[in-house]
Image (cartoon, rainbow, N blue to C red):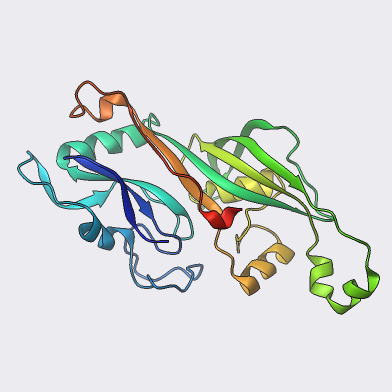
Length: 255
């Protein structure tokens, strides 16, 4: 869970943001943040320690800066600009939605809840995002792997452990999300509300039983920014190369 460089050249970098810290400094720490060895840090503060500063490059920034954000609880790839040109072109790519991102997540289905995830792949659309709950959001998804969970009928054991009885999990899905919009908590809401299968470790959107379990056991949020692709026009300094594509395998705890 440490910040590290995955790709770097003279004008940009792609880094792994640790789980549990914000991308940028905020006035107050999120109540959702996990307590860990990086408490009090943000990715923006860490960058000068892991990325080479721009040297002898026109328009070099005083310090490298992230050009988009991940939620505090989400780990994964973040694009960083080291020059004014890279910052401008990257912001335009995210604004115009020509930058593409893939997230990997673990979704869970509890016994008794209403699962809405029926197809192996599809598109989720909603108009309930933002502070006013009226912004449009769209996400493509694809099931990578699914595992059903079987339970033996042991009444004595269930009576001794009522918590286990209430938290029976019927299935788990490893899913890839491809957000077409970038609303706050978009994937977490779409998983819980539109698919009926919350992301493991989500303490806000999964319903009372799920949220209570997550708050008590404190698993990391199983949501990871695993791949990012910047269009070729956003990286003109990479002469003779194709679009910038960087990807990582999901953390081992996902298994």
